[in-house]
Image (cartoon, rainbow over the protein chains, first blue to last red):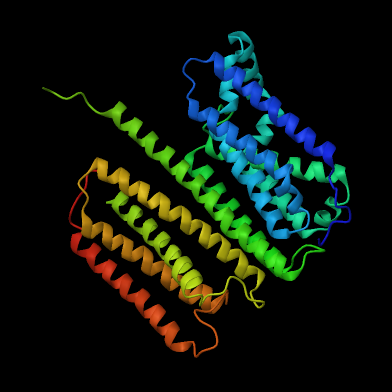
Length: 262
Length: 144
């Protein structure tokens, strides 16, 4: 135990709330899935995996271990901020939601999303990257990390931000789900490279100067895990967007090809 | 011609970054993850270069896959471009990152000069080989 004053933090109430939210979201997705005749089963599988990843990183033994051990804290950070958003985005929850709503309602909603100023501000690759990586800079380079472990409100806000910013970033970069705005491949690729670089830079800064209350060895191990674990997820993102580019090129060939003269 | 060139150069850069990461950082452990003398600028450029390298390796291969389904690949042209990319990056790494920015050295606790020479001469050889291969094949046209 290095930086936690109270062993029962954040408390059973918080863990139960997390599990209840998890069950509600899973049920909602299942009900929508059941109504669709052609929605692939693997998407439902991805959604279950994504929700489970988020839940185990907030409640249960792994989450409790993370309060005392900085390396485990980094595992949680990777699961909640990177892996869970990736799995959830790939399960296309927004598309499923729009498909299961009545047509008029869905049309209104998607038009509303496309016109909303709030969304057009948030739904930019660079905004997603800044919220994601910038939030992490604040967490680890200021006293926030230390304070988070003594205030429940801060604890909830920080974890909510890590998850939501990770989700927004993955969603905007991948564009596999319903998106209000679209960006070119090169635009998204450039922001992805910058964000990956920011993640690497931050993990080396943590290595050099761990947050308050974290010992030097723990900080070094955690930083290395953040560095290489982040690589795994980010290379997956790179492969996915390059594969999209490859598929899109295929489509242009089939359109342009002149009919063969037999 | 252009897609052969870019696919090869990007893949060459990415290949070098991966070789650097896998062999020198992980297997030999000659390079250090971070040493206490690394400057802020060093961390910044290293992060940018490595992440661009990962992207270059993957995108270079996808460009190559796209090339293969479009035209008949001209191998010397592609391999020549890979050599140019790899050699160019190695020279940049050897001169700018190791010497000018001092991010990290090739190896620690020994006389560094022979290592630096071997590193940079190998880079120049790669560049020359790539240049020759491209020069010899530059007359071959491709419907891009």
